[in-house]
Length: 263
Image (cartoon, rainbow, N blue to C red):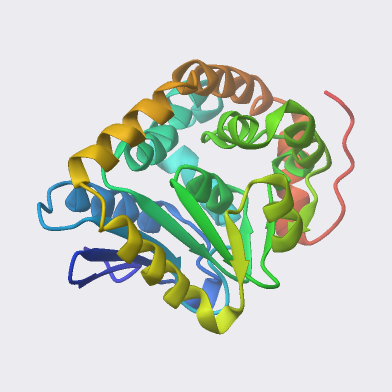
């Protein structure tokens, strides 16, 4: 396990900690692979009852590390833009594994939870946020859509209208509005965030683990997540070949406003 992700076992609670605080826990390929390994390891722990996921430092996570786009050619070849279905499948698989973990998962959010980080949180069962946390899916401002389950899972939580507003604008919202919309279960003071997660975990531990796991599978089975993920991947494969996508990423990396042309 790399130091980019730490795991801490406290009794029957397993913490998975994003540990890249100097970059606001921006998610690069190495951190993402380490996170996947931590989730897979949690599935093999017979004595764990609840998984808490949090971020070290000043933020849960600022989202994807945009410099990682430069590595796509290295990893997937010079024609990587024509292989977006494979790339999207690889990214989606990690959060699908998280969502299908039979253990209940609680995301503890603070600071920022943007883009891929919010998609990660949406794949958890429950989300608790510290006061002042900013959440958002800014992908459309880069010429993309949230394609790692963000579009599909957000619609499941808040319905099409609110999901469209958040995704179309790419804006950030605060934790209180996110709670009002149903993205967040509840908001607590920053200093009480971990304690709130522990309190909820302790309450969940009073229930029968097989019943909790089965309830999770039934509830999640009510939504057609698989179809949504396929649609996300199809849409993203079209967008990654667009001029607007290249302009959006270049503008982000250069710290300027993008000049989108709609092509």
